Length: 100
Image (cartoon, rainbow, N blue to C red):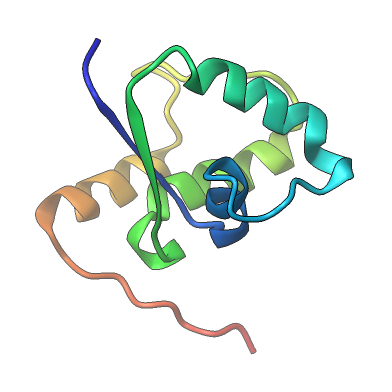
């Protein structure tokens, strides 16, 4: 199996997975599920700032709003996500603009 690089924008999650901090009881079940999957693959996990992980940030927010299981395929990918991926692929930097 190939090596997988996992980038997360939650420093706390990265530290939990790497066992640098204790798992909060409220997410212990989910962390055990993640660890079960990770034991089966060769991976590395690192923290990246949200601005460098815009596609994942979009998917997390979109999934929270949808609140149901959705399989994304090329025909039903949200247009905004397609735009984000194109910008990421072009190498353009993104900047976080604070909400007022």
